[in-house]
Image (cartoon, rainbow, N blue to C red):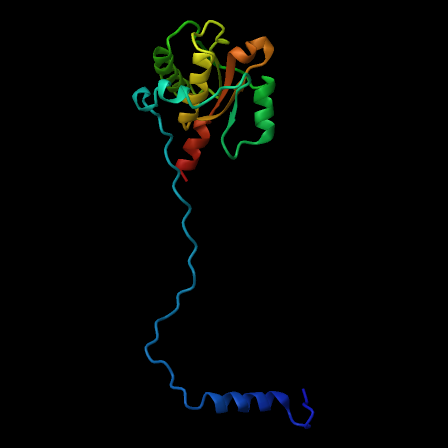
Amino acid sequence: MKNFTGGNQQADDFDLFRQQVQDATPLINSPVIVPERSKPSPFPRPPQIVPPEEIAPLASVSATIRTHDYLLFCRPGIQRRVLGDLQRGAIEVELEVDLHGLYAEHARQLIAEFLAECGRRRVRCARIIHGKGYRSSEQQPVLKQGINHWLRQYDQVLAFCSATRRDGGTGAVYVLLRNPDKQRQRSHR
């Protein structure tokens, strides 16, 4: 490329660069720059089974949480289609437990045992019948409020929602559980 003075612009630029760096001293024993390495994929955490003693009792929470008539909870990453199937009752219920008439503390322990049994049997979807709480001494249905609080504490619970009318309506919940086979596949990689 020619400049306006008629000379070669590349040669002029090179000469200018040489003039500017003529008094620079080269670096000796400079550290070798290592290109960025690919990071290994993280190891998945094993599913955590929470013993019933470690879950907060309902009495400490009941004053602060107001439970709505329809329950719905979903962990991040659950597809809308899967949640929609759960809400429609389209996922087959493989195991269920009925908590009618139980005291909250006994129900909490039974939930822990029930979820452990679901893990052993590789259950994907379960139903918990808690009732509507019409005979609760307080304004809120005690077991329903407990279910809403306790199920969120378990890592194996991916989502839960109130059941359809044919399966108990707002007196029961469908619980979507983590697929133990997928968890095992991730840990073997």
